[in-house]
Amino acid sequence: MDIEFAVIIISALLIGFLTGRLFARNRTGSDTSQSNCSESYIQGLNYLLANKSDKAIQLFVDLIKVDKETMETHLALGNLFRSKGEVDRAIKIHQNLVARPDLDQSQRGMALSELAEDYFKAGLLDRAENLYRELVQINSQNRSAHRKLFEIFCVEQSWLDALASAQVLYDQGEPDGRLILTHCLCEIAEQYLHKGNLREAHGFLVKATHIDDKCIRALLSLIDVHLKNNEDVKATRLLKKLLKSTPQFIELLIRPAREIYLLRGSAKQYQSFLINQYENAPHNSVAIELLESYKSCDQHEALEKFLQQAIHDSATFELFDFAFKYYKSRPEVFNRVWPGLVSQFPSIQPRRIAFICNSCGYESHTMQWNCPSCNTWSSLKPV
Image (cartoon, rainbow, N blue to C red; front, side):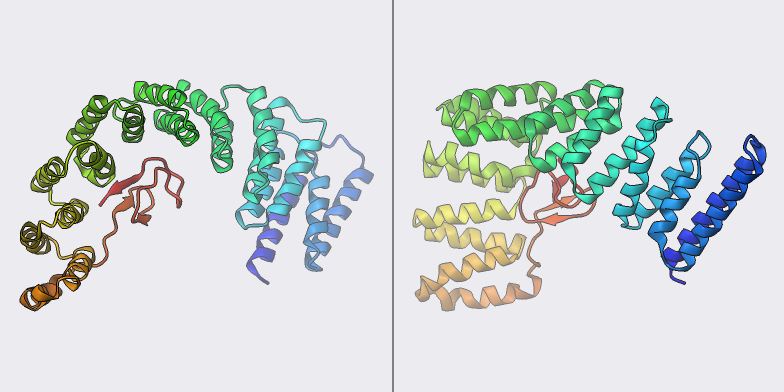
């Protein structure tokens, strides 16, 4: 007897026990009806023994009248199948409950919630959405339904709909309501940015910063908007704010810094910026960026000196990769530096993981605002 079969047997026995107790306490029917019930129960067990679990389940569901005592039994049986991956069976049980005309509003809400979860697990998002919308109509304060709607809209990337659900959760005091609301606003702003609509993008980003004035994502996107609008002073001010408040995110700040100090300034300004950042907190990304700057300006002496320092500080694959490519183009000095590079090989570090999710441990080389593993927002932090 496999585990699934044993679980069904136990469930059937439990249902039988509840049925017997129900009939013993409420002897309102005739002996004939009780006899028919017993025969149906025995027939259900025969179905199980014959490995016809679908027929058995349907018979047991039909057998027990839904009331306040047996409602939980039906829900438990459906949840059992859903937890075991038997979503189709869970759907059948919960659909049967929803279809019953004798449910009160509370019971119907419970059945709808479970059926919606079945649909969600089965990937039938449109059906799940319809049921969760119905639950919200029944009770506008149903946080669980609003949360599920938000999750569905995120999967579908329907960010305006997600924004409406996030706003409700925020207004109801959901613990992460502020977080998900700001990210929805940022997602919508990014869509407008891709379309070149800077005005709308700016509006949504400002709303995000009003909700959370330390939202890194919103501030980074605002820098992009300011730069596209040639508002260099505003962009520089925001960049300095982020460098001061969240220096650990320097890897995300290099790109806007490059545009501000290099493309709109000079190589000297950009190098000064990178040197200051590296002195404050040695970081591999800053080191590579500074080396590339020295290389593009043919500052070979400064490059070689800083390369030795950077490898000494942190011997990474990225730095050695840069070194070999650089010295390959300058064979006249390769033999001179080769012994020094070889001596650093024992201390070489594995390829660096740049970000890690503090919720589930997911590792990534790039920043992702929504963890692809556990779907938690802003959970990836620099290593």
